[in-house]
Length: 219
Image 1 (cartoon, helix red, strand yellow):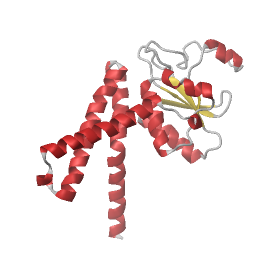
Image 2 (tube, rainbow, N blue to C red):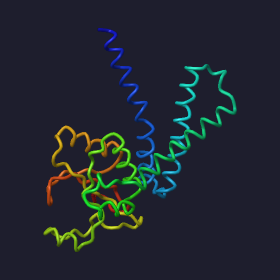
Image 3 (cartoon, rainbow, N blue to C red):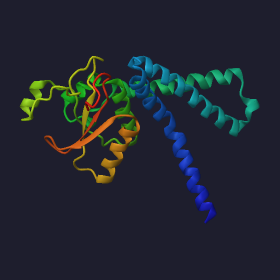
């Protein structure tokens, strides 16, 4: 059974290598913002650069394994850099600006997507790549929206637009999904540095938020 153990270890290593760039991109951006107050677009740009080099190393290692290190020329290196930049750019653009109608409860919610903080958009966009069943049920709110839902008005809701110019909270549907999947969804966002809260305000859902500097404890 030694081969089975080796296969398991290999698969685990492969998964870690595969998810590392995604984790660095989003978790690193969140960390720069929370720890040092780095402007969100600057933080994303910094992590874009870091992940660019990680992916370039990946590609160089694969190239070396297949063709040998002596086959890496200046011209081929430029080609790899361009390819990595394009792939990373498409990934970032997709996460930041695209939310399909199938991933939003209503067309109004879909149109609110760009009002959501960029870090949260990247997290949602990345999850969609692996699970297209994710459904965003709510993002931006005003105090009057709580009254319409028959709920007590919340003074410091992160569903309101914050000083960053973005909404820092969203709700995801959990109804119709297994508890295993919902637990994995919760931990996915927690590992990326976001706050998570499962509650049943108007319906069973998962509340995700990004901490606002100067508002400790508000989720």
